[in-house]
Length: 160
Image: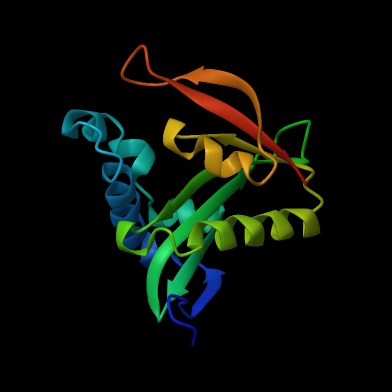
C-alpha cells in the first residue's frame, strides 16, 4: 500500500448501515462549522433510514473494512424523464476527507448511472461542495431555497 493511500472498496449499503450513514452525514455536515441549531433544522434531510436504503441506490465506501463515506441517488420512477437521477447524499467522514473517497464514490455512481441509461445527474449541493462537483463537469443550473431563510443551495447538473 502506498503511503497516504487507503484500501477502499465500494459496495451496496444494507438497511443495517442506516445509523452509521446517518452519523457520517451529521459529522460531515458539522465539519463545515454550521450552527448547531441549523444542524437540528436539517435533521430529517441528514437522516438515512433503513427504508430509504431499501428504496434507493445507496453505496458505501469502506476503507480498511470501516465505512468511510457513502453516496445515494434516487431515480423518480414516476417521472416522464426517467433519464435523470438525483444525488441525495455524498458524505465522507471528516477523518477520511481529502483521501479521494468522495471522488471515487462520485465516479463510481456516474458509471452506475451510465449503465442504467441515466443521462443526467442533478445535485442540490451544499455551497461548500459546489467546486467539488464542478471538477466533475457539474454546471450550475439554478438555485433552490433552503432553510433557514434566506439560505439557498446551488443546483448543478452533470451530463453523463
